[in-house]
Amino acid sequence: MPSLETRIAALEVENTPAEPLTIIRRFVTPGQPLPELQGLQDNKGKEWLRQPGESEQGLIDRASLQAWRSTGGVICLAERPCHRYPNRQAS
Image (cartoon, rainbow, N blue to C red; front, side, top):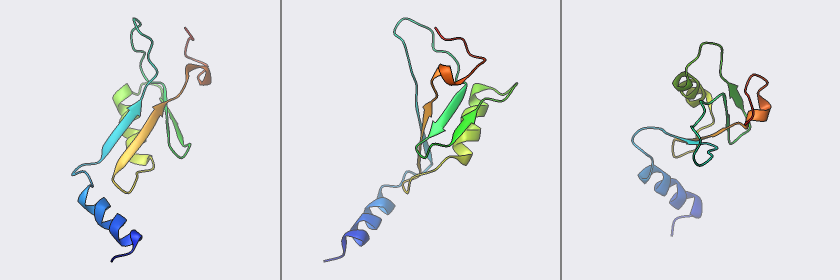
């Protein structure tokens, strides 16, 4: 019987998505509009702040290119809470 490592490696190869997948966790409040992202953080603690003039999608794209990616090709990013950003109004 193959070792556990060999079986896990085989499963990861079989279940790797065709294209990289980015998952973004957001903070939402029912009944309130969704504010634009001002910053993201990956599972390893690396952070990206939105640059002046950068679009929300630009921030996501930049973080997705630089973030830690799991063996299966998945990136998990989380919105950073608003108290971390001096330019963002807390509600």
